[in-house]
Image (tube, rainbow, N blue to C red; front, side):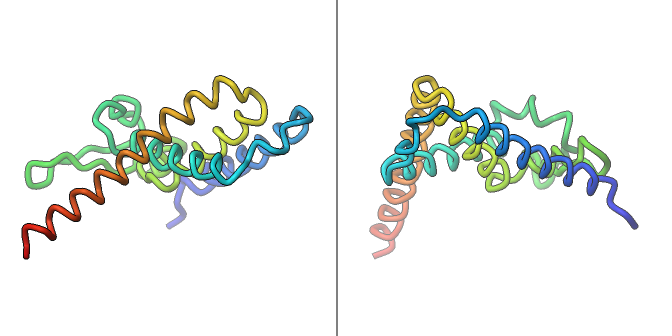
Length: 149
């Protein structure tokens, strides 16, 4: 059976390619040094955190609801992308932290080339939050293993 989301997946890919082309066409000169190793790390942390916020956090659930089906399993809510058309394609994108994280990384990278000041503030906030998540995971891991000894 043909998946009715496939044409929409292609449209999403085409949108990405078109956005990339548009940004490269209108990109201002003098921003070629925007991606230092520190900025790349910050962009990675920011896109990681934003991807998790969009795909997993309760606060963004109202934005996901038009694109997902919600089931209760063992007392927990489980969201799965709709099975048909554009809502299903968007649902597949926004319920996958890695998938939406890629798009967030692209938008932040494009934005840093076009509007570096405001995008830098957003990237810093998301990057700090992403770093905080990694540090928290390390502390939790160390605490768990310290109690096992």
